[in-house]
Length: 483
Image 1: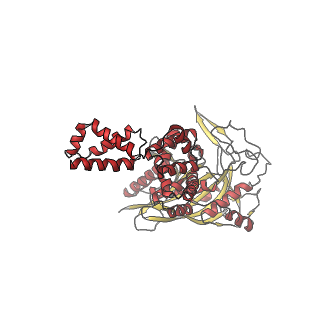
Image 2: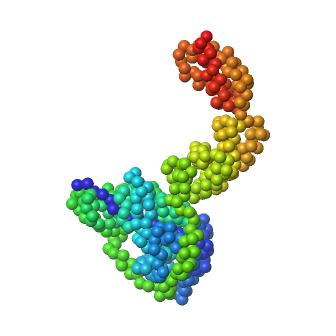
C-alpha cells in the first residue's frame, strides 16, 4: 500500500525591532556581539522585574497576520509556557497559546500542478531564548538573544511533499522580507523551521502519529530532515510497528533524525495566563492603518510583472527577493519611458547582472550599476550605438566603477561602427587573407560562414554592427558562388 506524507510547519522568525519583546535592551547580532552585554533584570528573569509589551513588535506581527490573510484578533492573551529552557533564565517562556494575535489565514504556493492553498492556523508573539555554545565538556550561555521578539507562524498539516514544504518555507520567508519584519538570514538563526511529520496510507484521511523535527535553519536541512523522517516512518509501518510521538533533532553529519524527548500533548508545557501582562487589546483603527500601509506583496507584484510581458519563470525570479523586485521595478519604469520593453531589462538582469553579483558577492541594492544606468546601456544597444558584446563589457565596467554607459563608451571610443564601406573593406581583407577557408566554404563547408564573421568582427575590434556584417558578408558569398 503506498503512503503519503502529511506535514505541518512551524516557523519562528525574529522580528527586526530595535529593542527586545518585554524590555528596553537592544536587539543585537548574537553571532558577533560580545556575550551577555545586552541584558537587564527583565530578560534575565530577576525577581520583581515586570515585562512590558513592545508595541513595534505587535505592529510587525499584525503586518504578518494581515499579509497571511489571517483574522487579527481584537483581544489576545500572553501565557507562560513552562518548560525547562537552560538558556532562558526565568524557567518559562512568555508566549501566546489559546488566544493568539492572529489566526485562520492562508497563503498560495506554486507546485507542478498549479497554485495550492496552505492554511495558516495561527500567528503569535513570544520571546526568543538565549544561545548555548558547547565546547570542551562545558555549555556556555549567551543571553543577548533572550527576550528578542519572536513570531511563531503555524500552518495546518496541508503539505504533502518535501517540495511543498520547501515552497511554503521559501514563500513565507519572502513575505517576511517584503514586510520588513525579518531579514531572512537563516545562517544567523533569525528564521528557523520545525516540521511536524506523519505519514498515512494514500487515499485515507487519517492523521497518524506525528513527530516534530526542531530547529532547522536552512532549506537544505528542512528538506533533507523531512525526507528522511517520511522514509523512516513508512518503514516503521511497513514492518508492522508504531511511530512514537516525540521531538527530534536533525544530525546533518549522519543525515538522520535523532530522538530528543517524548512529547504527548501541547498541555505538557502547562500553559497558563501570564499574570504580569494584561490581555492585549488592539484598536481596530490601528489595525486598518497598518493594513493600508502594507507593502506590495510577492503575489501582487508577480501579477504586475507578468503584465509587463515577463514569462512566469522570469517574474518568479524577480519577486523572490524584495531588493531584486525593487531594482527591476525601477528599471522597468525607466525602460517604458524610453520605449524599451521591460522584458529586455529582465533579460539583462538574469543573463548578465546576476552573474556579476554572484562573482562579487554583492546584493543588488549595493550595485553601482543603478537601474537608470542599466536602462541607459540597454538603450544604447537597442539604438545600435554599441553592439551586445560591447554592451556586456561596458556593464562589467559600470558594475565596478559606477560610471554611466555613455561615459564609458565615449571615453574608450567603443561606439559601434555601421559604416558599410569600412565593413566591406574588412570583409574583402578577410577573404583575401584566407583562401583555403574560402575554398572550403565554396566547396560546401558552409559553417565557415560564422568563422569569417568572427574574423571580420575581430578585425574591427569588436565594434562593428553585427547586422551590417552579416548583410554584407551574405551578399559577398552570393557574389562569389555565382562566380
